[in-house]
Every structure is written in structure tokens, then in C-alpha cells.
View 1 (cartoon, rainbow, N blue to C red):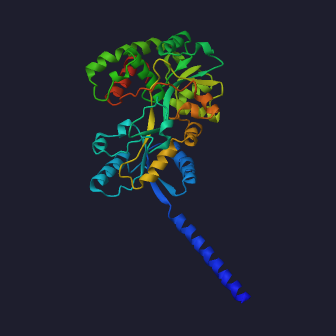
View 2: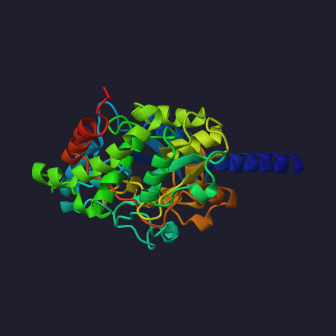
Amino acid sequence: MRFGFRVSSLALISAVAFLALGAAGVQAQARTTLNVYVDADTNITDWLSGTVAPAFEAANPQYKVNMVIARGGITMDDVINRTIAALKSKADPQVDVIEGLDPSDFTKASLDAKLWVTFSKQNIPNYGTLNPAVNILPYGLPYRGSQVLIAYDSTRVPQNEVPKTFPQLIAWVKAHPGQFVYCRPDKGGSGGNFVIRAIYEANGRNPSAFTADNYSDSLAGTRLPPAWKILSDINPAIFQNGSYPAGNLPTLQLLANGSVSMITAWSDMALQALGNGTLPSTIKLTQLTDLPFPGGYVYTAIPVNATHMAGALAFANYYISLKNEASVVKDIGGFPTIKLSLLPQELQDVLSAALTDKAPPIWPSGSWSDALNAGWYKYVATNAQ
């Protein structure tokens, strides 16, 4: 009887173990796959796949993230149009989250179709942590930003000389010939947004005077020439008597090697360069206080017909979590979209002089950009090839 009891006990234990292992296996197999479509450069997609997805999955083990990169054969417009079609036909769009959008990606067609989930504290618990100065769209959740800043060598530019306004920057450039440079506007956004800021300055610091649908040759002929006057006046004081680098990176390199003392730079590129030592720690960043240099934010959106709505909302909520927002700054050099006071003190110290409490204006691009580039070469950098 004892032997029989022992066999029965072992059998029971084995059966329990088998059921437990089987349940675990079923649970592992039952993980929900979230299809996250992303349109971004390699550095961002590497970060999403190597950092964000694993961290989200660790915090939410019931989900597995499938990053679908919208490059090459598929565009984000294709994804959005497919999702609209699925909404109309009540089919499965096989889309949960769409990442890497800017305001222009929220097309009239998608808004007319009421494609997007409206975000709030009710469906995104971390929603209240967003910085109110950020351009927040009802249907677009901003999770990282980038702005053009002033980067300067603090060993050569005393703190009391650091420009706080655009007129002060122009005055500094004139007073220190050869020590400032920005790149050609058609070759890099750090230069292009410097030119845009000059255009805003010449038009009453009013970004709303330039919209995607108000361009005309006559209006450009009125509003752009005053900016060409501002920029042509400082042309002789630019590095090497008006030698403009052909890109954002060459501009950073001139600051790093001491050829100049001050430049305009993208925030993400400058923060990454400071983090990896490409720029020395003596380089400091600051933003204008009258009207910041232009920039923008990247948005996450969820279609109302997302295949796995609960998982999509959980992913969006993690995107603006403190952990992920700190990673935005440390790992990809982006600006956070949550309130600065929530970040670790060391990150606050890095960002405090660079962040603005005003949303950066957004240039309408298109015909306005074509006129900007043509006018700059014709009236400002007349010797540039």
C-alpha cells in the first residue's frame, strides 16, 4: 500500500507539473502581438527595436511588439489609407499603433474618416505628465521633439554675452566676425531654421503669417526681402567671410574643432554629440527667449479600429512614461515631451537652458521653402555655389 501510494503521489505530482508547464506554455504562446508601424531614420528604428520594445514587453509581458518599418516599398500614407479602407469595410487593419507622424501626416482624409483615437487622461494615464508648452494634438501623442538651438563654447563666450533674443544674436555676430556660422538652408535644418527665424523676426515675430495655403509670389515678394536684409548684413561676419557649411554635421564639427565659437544646431544632434564626447563638455546649449527657433515634435497615433486597442493604449502610455522619456534624452538626444521637473536632476541640468516654455513655430514648407532657398542664394550668400 505504501509503495502504491508513492507511485500514485509521483503520478499526481508529474501530472500537476505537466499541467503547470502546459499552462505556462499556453500563456507564452498567448502573448498578443502588437503591430507598430514606424516611419523614421535608422537611429530611431534601432532605438525602438533595441530599447523601447524590450522595455515595454518586460513591463507588459502579455504583449509582443512587432515593429513594421514603413520605408522602401511601403509609405506611411499607404498604411493610413489602408487603415481608412479597413475602417470603412469593417475589416481588420492589422495595425495597432502608428508612430513617427508629424502634423501634416494627419491628412484631411483621415480626419474626415474620424480615424484617430482621441487621447486623454481617461485612456492614457500618463497624459497629465505632458508639458503644456508642447504642441499637443487631440489625436497625436507627442513623445519626442527636436528644436534648433544656439550651441556655443563657454570658454570663449562669457555667460553675460550669450544672446537671449534674436536681435542680441545678430548683434553678437556682427561684434565677433568669423566666430559664428550656420549651414546652407537647403542642406540642413539647423541653417534653414536660422533663416526661418530671421523671416519671422522681419515679420513681427508672427509665424502665423506663413501657412501652407497662403503662399503667393506677391506675398513672398513682400514678406521675404526684409529677412534678406537682416541676413545679408551679417554675411561678412559669418565664418570665413560668408562660408556656409553644406550640412548640420559640418557645422557641428566647426564648433568642436574651435574654428567658431557659436553655431545653430539641432538639439538632438548636439545632445548626442555631448553625450558621446564628439562635442566637448565646454559646449553649452541655449534657446532664444523672445521667440524660439523653429522645431517640431514626433507623434504617436492609434486608429479607432486598431486590432488590439488595449495593447495599443498600453504602448502609447509607456511611450510617455518617465523611463522612456529619460531614454529619449539619453539614448537618442531628443527633447522630452513630459514636464522637465519629472526628469532626473542630471537631465534637467542638461536641458534647462535649452528648453523653452513656448511651443516652437512650425514652418509650412512647400512653396514657402522653395522661395526661401532661392531667395537666400540670390540675396544673401551671393558667392555660394
